[in-house]
Length: 469
Image: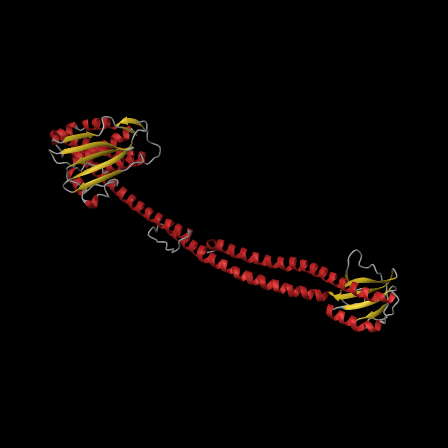
């Protein structure tokens, strides 16, 4: 189970790790960036407010008196608005006014007006005046071209942190919602990829175990559905191939066993004297006939094996009329014995084709041999060659016993013999038409059959016309 689900679990683990890393990055990077941004923003706002107060209080040094006690309400209002404390400090570092009166008249030990350095603010406990860190900005109070004091505004860092936390809470909630919504992707992946893939894996295991009858049911129109349909097609074809192999082996065994049994029986009868010497020649002739049958069967198997290989054709241009005439002439003796006439018809005096001459001669030989074998005595076999555009059509037609309609699709199978065939000729191998079809198909051409029982049969195949004609 671990192996089967490892890919899915890796995906889940990767998804969770990604979500965790996203949360950590948001929590750290966003927190740091937000803190820096808010500190700088708050410092700028506080400095603007301090500068405004400093410009207001500088009037005391321009010929007008100012009672700092009277400014207390103003400082309180500003401090309340800013959520901090506002101090007014003289040059010696003594607090002369305070928004909450907690540090009035307090001398700041070590007071340094340049304590912020090159920044507009500083974060510290401000010389120990606070028990916590504050963000402090300072603006000088000037008069008569001299600095007479400073306006200090202190904002607790906790205020900034509260703002950051509020902002981050929104960010965290948003991230969690997005992460939750992204679970839809995981659900879609599980439904459309993982479950179908699991079914496909189970089906592949069934096929590997030899259960080619197993059907993979996947009602989808995507790539997974196409893959399932392909696997079902593959299993059907493999099942057909397996059935074909069983039939093939059974047919080969039968066709080899019959002549071997006959040969063994005849030879044993000769050796033990069952067949008298004067009859031995007759039965030895039968032994030779059976060995010829075995040889013919072996040659047919070798031919089919060669046809299964690619690149075996040796093509060239030749006159199909001449090949038909030569092949037909080789059946002269057989035709005379059954008083059969071969009627040859050609649409042109010269019909050049581009094909393997030897293989096409074998096709013609098998078709004419079959036509003679299943024709009635005193009949005619019609052989025609016709040019149609870039193709040459060759037809072999007899007026014999014909092929039953139910057997037409089976005649191309290896070792197939109809009952009529077995009755007429028990020496046939059942490989002739298989060889014919393999040769024509390897030429990239087609062969068809038209047959009516007790009327006759016609085989028609095509060949490519020679390109230079």
